[in-house]
Length: 443
Image (cartoon, rainbow, N blue to C red; front, top):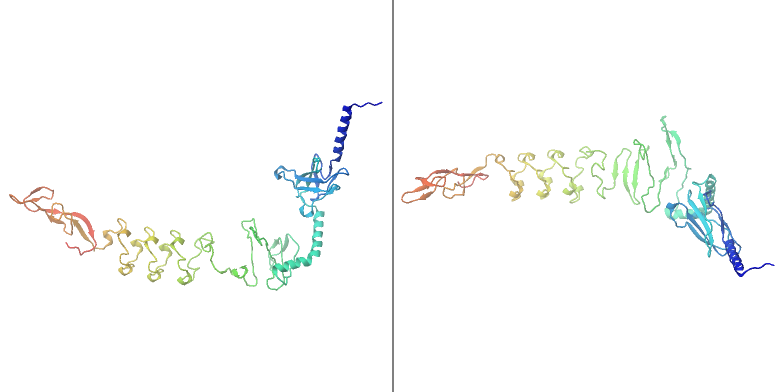
């Protein structure tokens, strides 16, 4: 007869509960392995597991297995208790080349063992073929709906497009005269004469971002990113806005622009021009730039770089008095040493050209006007000697008679050295005070 103690019965009961719980936990089956990455060719693999028949709802979790991808689940979905498999929706598959682990649990249980798997680096040929068939089927089913959407965007009737397949490395003869063989990545030909027909059209529908309708790139330093040719003699390039043509380049290279308005970079020097001094007299025809073409204050001194306009840039007689408005050239617009007597022709500036008080002492620095500038019209000026009457006053006389310094018992005069010792007036030499421009001073 078998005997069981209370302690052994309790142990058996606890063991049975544990076995029951372990049996009810779902077990991951596919895809993946516990010790290595199993490869899946399908980026939307079918996840399958095994569990007891009486399981409650499940929670399935897919995590990135690479540390730099973070620890946020890629998928975490709730599934009904009777399910045994789940597949991500086709529009939300996993990344090619991605590494993952996945696990599953009952809502009230713990996560089962995780399995490791990896998606192939790129789709297989079979996957590409299948995707092509799916797209063709969709286009056939949605053709009318797609056409109505296109009409709403570009208008009705729709233009007729003939789209050639992608081609690479097509060789063709460079010219009808037997030129060299050249290669084109894509060669698009449109034989139609309908207005706005084109051999190739590039379009970007993005409303934001640095995007381009057509981008040309070359790696060769001798290459050209884009080449345009018009054998019919018309324009080779035309830039349009929705309402007008902004820029046209004709078949001989002439550029016609609607305007040069904007940020002022139309003609701003070497950065915008192909070479130094590209714009000279031969590029600007006579009278091409006159006052009627320049808005008031459009050319101010702040727009002319230092040294940009020098005497060497103007032909003789290019700037005449009648071409300069009254007050146009003032002292603040002329830099130091910009105008010297060597830069003015004889008689160029007469008294009639200088307004009253236009030139004052503040306009001349020390040493600017010297005796040699006045051609003999000046007078020598002296300061009367300190031993003479009226000492310190200006005079045109080189000498003066010394002043009396004593009258009794006999008259005595200063001796030009400050001493009262002369018995008669002495002729003293007056002090040199400079030169006088006006000859009308009273001696």
